[in-house]
Image (tube, rainbow over all chains, first blue to last red; front, top):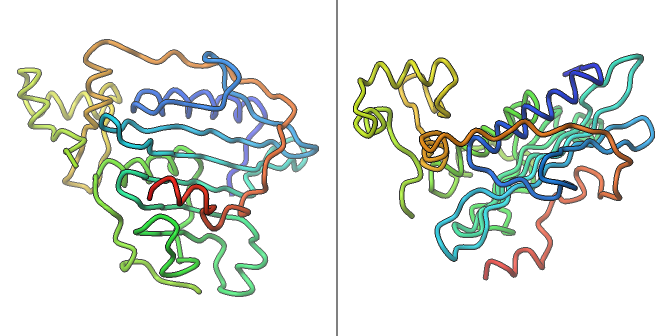
Length: 163
Length: 88
């Protein structure tokens, strides 16, 4: 479980945004071009970065979204949930790395994290796949960016289906 | 789909430097790259073009604002029908 002070969390966001842009991602959904923000919701801080990855001319955009929920515990923040999503519309696939509803997934499957893999976007061969934990949004970005960079559909059959 | 990355050798040729010099740029964090496996490194073309043109994205200012309404993480387990339709 990742923990951070508020200053560390803000720096994490700055570094994440700059890294994404160095790799050619276009960050959307922020209030201004020189700012990135966390949303405060009670005792939670919400990270929600939407971006587009480059596409060839006239191809539909490839969307990469990084979402996290951090909760205050004492004087630190802990990463409680994440959802890192890649929707590749030109190649028509989806990959996602998720951690949410932890109690439910532990009870049902004895796992904390799971993944989604749709070799045709919106068509599930399996509702949830077992997945390795992701060490924060930076790693989530690089795992999904690496898939995009390969330029081919993902091999969902290599994953272990949970349900 | 066209290839989206260069190999270190292709970058070395483009820059007229040695393979080792490219790996050094990557190891120092100067040149954006992805290590796919211990032996395979990919340099995204889009990132290489930015780097070569001298474009360095400025760090953005980070702030905390009231959260805008957002569906909880996990509520988008399935891709909405309207998003699926965009691809057809």
